Every structure is written in C-alpha cells, then in structure tokens.
Amino acid sequence: MAKRGEIKGENDLYVIKIGGNVIDNSENLYRFLKDFTALPGKKILVHGGGKVATQLSETLGIEPKLVEGRRITDIETLRVVTMVYGGLINKNMVAQLQRFGTNAIGLTGADGDFIRAKKRPVKTIDYGFVGDLDENSINPKNVSSLMEAGFTPVFCALTHDGEGQLLNTNADTIASALAVALAKDYHTTLIYCFEKKGVLKNIDDENSLINEINPRQYQELKEQQVIHSGMLPKLDNAFNAIACGVKEVIIGHAGDLGNLITELPFGTHLNSDL
Amino acid sequence: MAKRGEIKGENDLYVIKIGGNVIDNSENLYRFLKDFTALPGKKILVHGGGKVATQLSETLGIEPKLVEGRRITDIETLRVVTMVYGGLINKNMVAQLQRFGTNAIGLTGADGDFIRAKKRPVKTIDYGFVGDLDENSINPKNVSSLMEAGFTPVFCALTHDGEGQLLNTNADTIASALAVALAKDYHTTLIYCFEKKGVLKNIDDENSLINEINPRQYQELKEQQVIHSGMLPKLDNAFNAIACGVKEVIIGHAGDLGNLITELPFGTHLNSDL
Image (tube, rainbow over all chains, first blue to last red):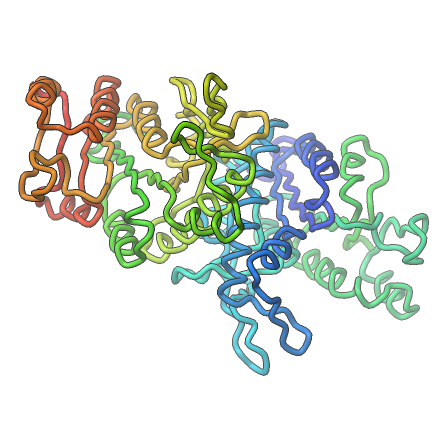
C-alpha cells in the first residue's frame, strides 16, 4: 500500500455517495459518472436506491410495509432491493463507468466481506432485514486490497451479517463508515451528493449556499436555527466522520461534481479548521 | 503473481461452472458451496441462471420471445436477467460463500472489465442483447489481479461491450473462456457441474460413467455413437479448452464435487494424455 505523502495526491481517496435523484435520471447519472471518472486519485462510489425498487415492488404487488411510519424490509422487499440495488442499478452503473474509463467493480458489503452489519434488534418495531453498522463493520484491509489492485469499488446499499444473510443498509451510513475506516490509510474526503447546492441559509434560495462550516460555526448555525431539522442528522454524521479522521466532508449537488476538477466552487465544505 | 511450480498446488486454479439444477435447490446449493470452499488453491465460480428468472419474467408479464425456436434477449428480458443473475442469485451465493469462509466477490463481465463480448450480429435472427466471446474477450491480467489480492471471483452469465451495454452470455462459454485465458498463468482445471454423474455410456444408467476420455477415445466414442448429440457441443468445447492449454476438464455431478478432496471418483475426466 502507498505510504502517506509519498507522491502528492497518490494517497488521496474520495468516498462519494449519490442518491435516487441522480440514479433516476439517466442524463444526470451519465454526467455524474463522467465527472466521477475525471476525479484523480482513488475513489469509492456508494449509491442508494431509486424509484425503480418502489416501481418493481408495486408491479409485483408487494405492499410497502410500514410500522409507526417506518418502512420495514420484509423478505419480499429484501429480494426486490437485492435485485434492483445489487443487480440492475449497480451493474448498469459499472458498465457505464467502464465505458468512461473507470475500472469499476460493483459490490454489496457481502462481496469481499467488505461490510458486515448486525440485523437491527427488535424493540418496539421489527424493521425486518435491516442492518446497522458499528465501528468494526468495515474491513479496511480488504477494501484497500481491492483498490490497490487497481479497481474502483461501487457499493450499493446492501451488507451482510457474515452468516449468509444480506441486509438492507442506509447508503449515507455506508459512505460515512467507509470514509472513517479508510481515513487511517488515505487522505479521505467524503462527498454527499444530493439535490441541493449544499447547505443553504435559506432552503428556498440556491444562492444562499454556505461555503464552509467548522464545528464552532455549526454550533452557532444550530443555535440560530439556520440549519433546518432534515439537515441535522446529515451534518452530525459528517462532523462525526471528521472527528474520526476524515479530512473533509463536502455536501453538494451531483451536477456540480466536475467543479472539483475545474476548481470552481462546489457545495458546502465541512472541516475541522478553526 | 506466483510462478509456476514454486510451491506444489500454489498455482492451481479451478474454474467451476454450475447450472440451474444446483441453483434452484437451496440444499444442493449450500452443499455445493461448502464443497467449493473446501477445495484448495485458487478458484473461480461461474453460474448460469435458474428458474427464478423465468418466474420473474412471467410475474412481470414479459412473454418469452422466441424466433425460429431460439430465445431472444429483448431489453425487458435483459433487465430481468441483470436483476436475477447479477443481483439475487449472485449476491446470495456470495453471502453464503462468505459464511462458509470463501472470500467471494460477485461479478458480471462488466466489473473490472473482466469479460468483453460483442453483441451477436443480426443475420436471419436478431437475438437481442446476447454477447458472444472471442479469444480477446477475457482480461486475464485483471482477473489475476483480483485473485492475487485474495478474492474468489463468482461470475454470473452477463458480460459487457465496453460501451456501457450489458449482454447476456452463455455461462458454459464464459467458464471455458476464463479457463483458457488463465491457463497461461495457472495450472487450470475446468469443471462443468451438471445433473448427471458425468459422460455416460448409457444415458439412463448412472453406473455407466466413463471415467476418462482423451481425444483419440473421443473420436472412437463419437464413431460408435456412444456419445449422444446433446453432449457433443459440451465435449467439443472441453477438448478445445484442453487444446488451448487447460490441464484437464471434468464433467460431473455438483453433489460429487467433494470427492475431489476425499480423492473419490468424480465425473468424467477429459485430458490430452494419449
């Protein structure tokens, strides 16, 4: 494995998460995958689901199972997400990345024993086949081996329990856990791509982008109630990753990823600089 | 990469293909995957589809499209096989292999650019999204890199064209092409697991197993019409692989794979020894 700082940039790693808003629009997706390919250094892509899984479930007559407003992954739903996330979305994305020149390999957490999760314990709600991560979930040695062998991992939102069971796992959490686990060996930047320009002062005004937030400023923004409730878990998660060694977290629009190469502004940068 | 003969067994490679008859029965599949795990040396698993793809197509109301008795892979069918082969079957098989201790990675030919195919040209029949392999289809360097990094590849019957298009490709052909392409770097054994004990003198008598066939004996058996028509393409393909450097081809029952370890008789051994 390359040692830190041997050659500038050689040890950089981007962990980038995209959501359904990119996946559901093939034009946006192709543009994103081209920009992803152009990024230098080592890269890991993590993708969530899209509308396709919901559509397939509906076609197959699988009723969405909700308990106290929470979505449950029953065995039928797990089959659907295994087919759609692990097969249809992941493998088509890999084929596109290959076309653009990224030597991608499409993965679940079961592949290479990369990500082990624990089936969420049943308390008041039985979430079904949902897996939660802990600090030992990622196998950084195996992920590094794959990258050092020249491949670019593309993870979907599935993990396993090590006992043969696949589990549905939140893609944001997978991205953050990967970034943290690899931060010991790489200069890691975690990027969340979503449908907004980044963290906005006014959610209805795309021009109100906050360029940078450090932990102190985050506290202030929370106290001023500038950051609205939906962003809080994302930002808490991001600052936790930074506290655990991730160099920087960027939250931005998938369509702007190319700005990282052209050095134009891209999203909100979260970092530990005071 | 390990050099030939450095340590006995270190450079052995098994390429093993299983078909729907193993995949469709979970008990048979688990037994097979346990036996596969117990095999020493490097290994590649190649699997075909099973009844699940047909069942899903029926549920989704996709009519099987046949032209002159040949099955066509239209875009809807390609979606189904990408979900079922690349997702459901492949990833569950990987999760089971991990449980048994094989560090498996589930793949299509698009992953790692391992297998490029050409869309079958339209002559009298348009087969749709079917890919044919040629002598340059396999990227042995990339496959070796993955194996030398400690992973066991598990391929489903999908390839890509390098231009972003996934293609449905015969699993027997994929197994044979992989074995041939890797025979330069490994002592390669190609194993076809199917529902019979091996090549039988009398197809209705499982006790009539032919233990070994070399090319001369194959000619004789063909002349005597002992080998029936359905076996001919499989055996022609096998002897072609041997002519191209594969050490041995074994055709046997998936349930007997464990005999390779206990050194009990297993299937029909095809080799070039005269």
